[in-house]
Image (tube, rainbow, N blue to C red; front, side, top):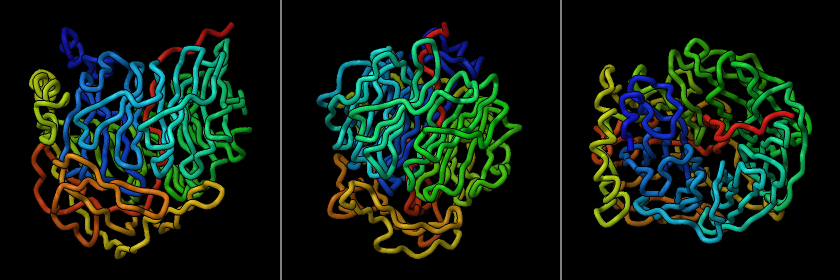
Length: 491
């Protein structure tokens, strides 16, 4: 996989080739729904997955989901825990153990630029393109089957987001002929779209950052101009935008709290670090000196993709809104594919055979030892039985119960299970919506308070018996999304 580019990849951390790049993580999703059992980390050498909240991790090679040499994938987690991958090679969906990948029913065989899901994971929207003959492809069963929605003729599309609490609201960023950036919106679940604006303060590139979990008319757009990036906000469904922040270097991280009150941004510059704004207030720096590659807020935790070489870990988490970031995973602790994937599975056979070669660059990283895990005991509120309930009203919108105003406060622990399960069971959150639990027998008891942010191996649970506790939270974040193809030239 690394081939002749290995030497270059080790020497040049910023190399932008699809393979042969320096080992790093740059995209992260969690779920399903209000849970964080499934953690999926995109790296430069495949995917790293956990099904038990970060206690155990397994590596999945690009060969197993047939996307070798394709663009960096976009990821979504369905309501039953299935992981959907979107690349230029097509859509792939996992089995329950993430050992087999297949083409989902009804999905056109074409390249995809993005995939996004509602909070509950039931509705997914994939963005086919960018070719100038693009389309939205829709799923109402967590990515298992798909139908084609709106055609985006004449547009070169880039990113898509479906509102977390309103499956009818979908946003798309694209480029019209001539290279002009455009924001489009759908109010019928992606069946039709219309332009909302082309006014982005002379930005060269635009990328959806996130949609407010409670107010689908509120969205955020990253707009690149020169070497820096502006953060734009709309409160009228994308009709108008205003600047609310910026970074001098490329903005690679954005996260939005589940109540919409707190925003985080980060750039490629350590000098800028992670910036936080609460209720529209001034931007303040948090998190210390971290080489941020992506941000995501989910279920009471702020997740941070970090620099393995300088930070000692690739994925960290914070329960206090970014003031302190502790390690969750070091890539150098990976032991290869999950033990759940036997030799008769694509992951077990294909990935297992090439792991010694792929892992060589990880073993060659000249850095300090991986950071030790940190256990939190922050006095979380006792579990509330119905904290994770999500109800569906007659209009099809998800009603999300209120969460504590203080950052990082946990309301209810997740039930975390072991890794080696052949299937995913999905206990009901309410009459209409499910969230999955990996059922693999008894797991260590979750601590009553705090959360477990630990460095874990790929096949053996890390030391200690803690479990990752979470509050009800919504995935409203935009990790780093790189331009797959340049926009058409201006005429």
